[in-house]
Image (cartoon, rainbow, N blue to C red; front, side, top):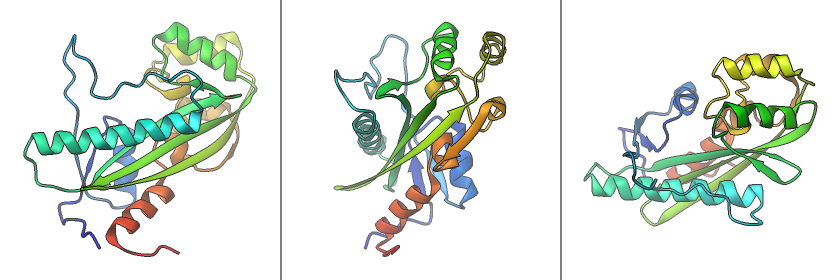
Length: 208
C-alpha cells in the first residue's frame, strides 16, 4: 500500500479544466508545470507516430507526461508525491484531431466534425516511484451540422484555441452538442471515474 501524502498529489498539466475537475472531487493537488523556454524542445514530444491509433497515442502521451513530471519533481528536489498527467485527443474514423495550430486549422477541424459522430479519448496516468498506472476513457460525441458562419463566430471567440478537436464541451460549443455517450468529464479532459480508480488503486484499495 502506498499512502498518498496529506499534501496531495502533483498535477502535471497547465489545463485549468483539469484543475477544476480535481477540485470537484476533493483531490488536493499542487501544480507541477514544465518550463517552456522559447527555442527549447518540449519535454514531451506530442508528434503523432506514423500509423499510430488514437488510443495508443493518448496512452503514450499520458504515460510520457507522467514520467516527465516525476523526473521534473526529482530534479527540483520537491517532496515526493504521486504525479498525475492526462492527454486528450479527438478522433474521426481513426484520424487524430489534436490541438489546432491556428484558427484556420481550428475552422477546418470543426468543418470536418460538423454533423459527424466522433470519439474523444482521454488517457490518465498516475506515477509514483516505479509504479505507473494508466486508464483510458473513450466517449462518443455528435455535433450538430454547423454553418460556416457559426464555425467562424465560434473560432473567433477564441474558445477553440488549444483545444483538442477545436472545441470545448463545457463552453459555447455546448449548443452544438446533439448527443454524448460516455464521460462528460472525460471530454473536458480528465475522466473523474477513471482518475478516482487510479487514486484508489494507489492507496491500496480495491474499488471493485
